[in-house]
Image 1 (tube, rainbow, N blue to C red):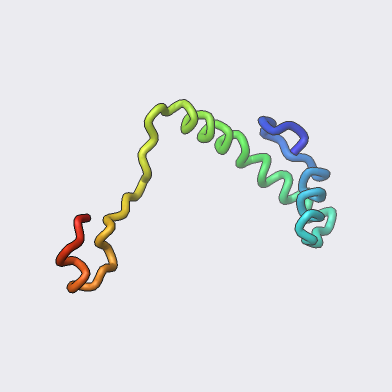
Image 2: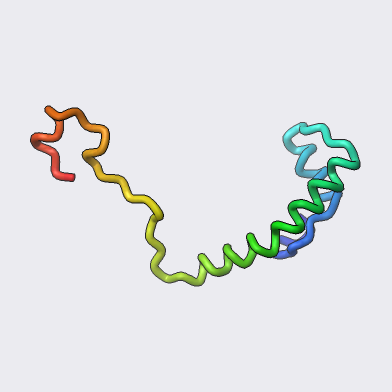
Length: 79
């Protein structure tokens, strides 16, 4: 991107990124992608900043170590 914290992506940004993965984009497609991502970026940057400001993040999901274990494996498990 032009500026890592910028909310605007340029057509050149999109074309350069597409070239890195050998994705053929027409100029019209690159314009549309840049417009779409630029519309999403302010909210994404705001969410990122909000998440970074939280001191104690907890996972949205936790996993019980006994999940998926067969009944005979559960006998000695401490989950």
